[in-house]
Length: 191
Image (cartoon, rainbow, N blue to C red):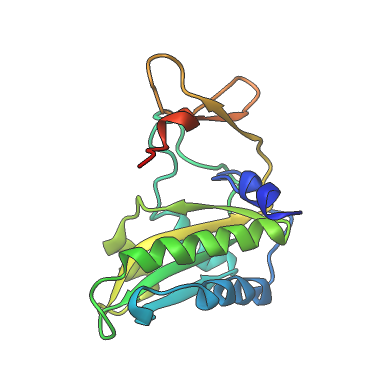
């Protein structure tokens, strides 16, 4: 897959085949992609908590909200839940500000996951207090993002927004997930 195909194939997948597992070494490889990516000021203040264990995954799953615009959807059902997680942590003993690095690391991880035949979803809607308690995450670590991973079982399609400019993603009766994107020509400002 060339770079353009990789980028256009990297979507936010929220339903997975739980029969297809991800090995711990694959998660370490994905973290390696993040480690090799740029870091603002070369501070390198991120740490990565990783899990492929069903019991730990269940604790993480229960601390997440899955799709803001799908009000009647509680998240993936048994059999379609993630089989692995990478929790991005900001080490405040290294630096307080890690926002730029989180985005860079997360995108590197998702691109890597797709390149390896998997997919994932960045989740920022987290019950951080509960997650910290469940996993005994020390207070020195910020919890900006969780990445859910697995073998996707859903089709995600991008489409241009309609005349109203509505950007809310939605699903049709077949479960296809549609993601409206603003028209490309609106993004460019020539100077």
